[in-house]
Amino acid sequence: MRHLLTLFDLDPNELNSILATARYLKDELRSGRRPPILERHTLALLFEKPSLRTRVSFETGMTQLGGGSLFLGDDVGWGKRESPADFTNVLGQFVDAVACRSKKHERVEELASFNAMPVINSLTDLSHPCQAIADVLTIQEAFGSLTGRHVVFVGDGNNVSRSLALACAMLGMHFTLARPDGYELDQPWLDRIAARYPDAKIDQVCDPSAAVKHADAIYTDVWTSMGQEAESKIRRQAFADYQLNADLMAAAPPTARVLHCLPAVRGQEITDDVIDGSQSDVINQAGNRMHAQKALLVFLLRPQWIDENVPQADLATP
Image (tube, rainbow, N blue to C red; front, side, top):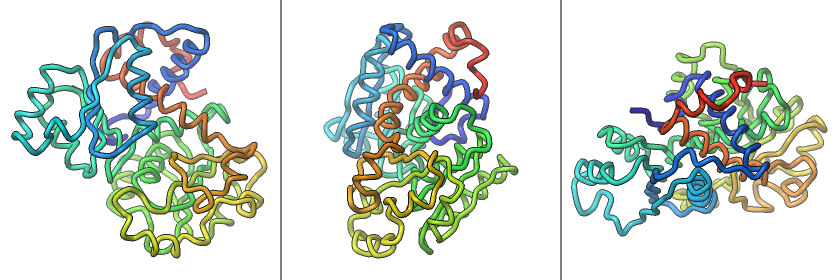
């Protein structure tokens, strides 16, 4: 049984297959076609954190694929009313897969350990693989070939940048994190990437202007994520020189695209003129969450459909 807890659960060929399927399904939708690939399938959405994009994109995506979804909040008593084994094994009797948005990564690992149904990490403190797949899909749409592209993340070495760094390593892209001291990508994660992808090009710098000089995509995220509210004042001070604004964009190539996983604190990590500007792909990036996740669901639940329907030429990065 396959799960997606981090992108380490995929190899580069599988990631490219998911990207090709996402492009195919997006083109189908634009043409008015919604093939019922997952007809009579049910996805459970088990969420400990609030959500807009993740919840709506998964629910809408399942509907477009001919299936259905169930939102499970605190009322189901996950980890409270019964043992994790009983909860998970019973849930597996009812649904075909679960997308879990959890505060701690260990929670999704525990869910997957019972192999009751495929488990998708839809956000944890460690990793956000669904976001990273949508991110690279967006970059692919902007530039075509991904190989050699330079992605610069201006901000924190958090779950989003951690997942994007791994995606870049898998697809032959250069990843740079521009961050203040103390907010680096953690070494165990970097060591794990290096062990799997020894040719990965990942670096970390303190100067955001130097970092974006040759950037193809410039990415930022909130300075204070959910659960870090007590650090808000310290983080605002630490990241004060890391705002994605007109001055920073002037240091980048005019072809650079702007990305943000949203929600954004406008006027803090990014200014209105940049997020709403002509170089911004932020709204398309948000929309690509649904297309990427539809492809992931098909990959996990009906992989043979990809073999039979997605043109083989599309399975390679264009």
